[in-house]
Length: 124
Image (cartoon, rainbow, N blue to C red; front, side, top):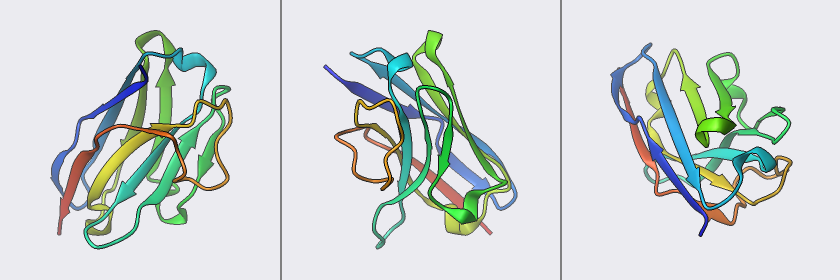
């Protein structure tokens, strides 16, 4: 059974940092890409970042370039989203997801398997 579980969300002031973790089970992480997606209140889901099985990055949002990075530790079955210099507009529920493909999708939101999400709240 494919499972993804996010953790590490919380509340920070603008300029702060958070690191989200996505622990996966039921499939070999080293073979597949994992994406991060967020959904703000009243808005549609938007792709944030993706890391492929070969550790290549795909940014879906220009607004997070230079502030967010993604990494993976296959031995720990975990993918990380490091978020720095957070802004109030980054407030959202953040999800990790996979389509069980080795590459990142062209559209950063059309994944088959999703975690339940982690709330990130950034206050001004």
